[in-house]
Each structure stands twice: as structure tokens, then as C-alpha cells.
Image (cartoon, rainbow, N blue to C red; front, side):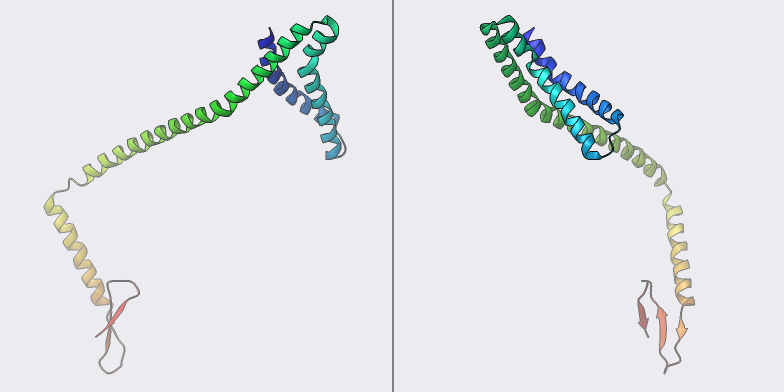
Amino acid sequence: PSILYSVSIPVLDMAYKFVAEALTSWENHKTHSAHIDALIIKRTCFYFINNNLSLFYIFFWLRDLPRLRRQLQTLMITTQLMSILVEVGLPYFQAKYALFQAEQLNKKKNKNKNKNNKNMKTKTKMKDSEHEEAVKGDNDDAVEKNNNRETDLGDKSQTKRASSFPGEQTNQ
């Protein structure tokens, strides 16, 4: 029963935290500071009662000092073990979960990458002759556009010709 009580203390503390916040918000205080003060009073009272009630009961009602000693030892050891578990165990499991998420993301990326590679392979199965014709047609169009861009500047036989690079012009 002592270990169960020691474990129930933090659980009840968390539960009362939400209850105290709800009760304080229902009180509808005029100022934020009054709201905070009421919340602090509620949480402090519950924390004191929750953590020390069994000790007061054993000491003042039962008057059993050996049992009080065992109860204190159990409370302190259980609290320390739970603190160590949270301090060491929580970061460990968070790191494991982060690795798991990263692996899932990599699997998803690889799956999408494989789909894209299959699509690219089907597109690149074009016959060589069709590819050469397409390239030749593109080159002919580019040469024709270039020739159409020639302009006469009117200066002593200088002609400005459009370059194949944007913004670059060559003088002839």
C-alpha cells in the first residue's frame, strides 16, 4: 500500500492541477493577478494535503513511529526512482521515437523516389531517331530566332547580333 500511495501522489497532483484551473476560471476573477493568487492557493492546499495526509494520519492518529519511518522511506525512494525514470527514460524514448519517425520518412521518400524513377524510365525509352529529330528541330528553331534578332544600329557598319545567352550581346 505504501508504494501504491507513493505512485498515486504525482498522479493526483496532475489531476488536481486541471481541477484547480477549471475551478479558478469559473470564479471569474476581475484581474489576472487575482486569478493567479486563487490558483496558487488552491494548488498549494491540495499539494500539502495530498503529500502529507498519510504522514499526519500515521503520526497523530496511529502514533506509530516505525510505520511512519517506513512510510517516509517508501515515499522518498519512490519519488527518487520516478524522478530518475523521467530524467533518463523520457529522453531515451523521445530519441527512439525521433529515430522511428526519421526511418518512416526515409521509407516514404524512397518509395516516392522509386515511383519517379519508374516514370522516368518509361519516358526515356524513346527511339534514338525520334530523339535526334526532336533535337534537330529545336536547333533549327533556335538558329532561325537568332537570325531574326539581328538589328542594324546605323553606326558605320556595326551590327548588333543577339546572343544565345540572355542579356549578352555581341558586336560584329
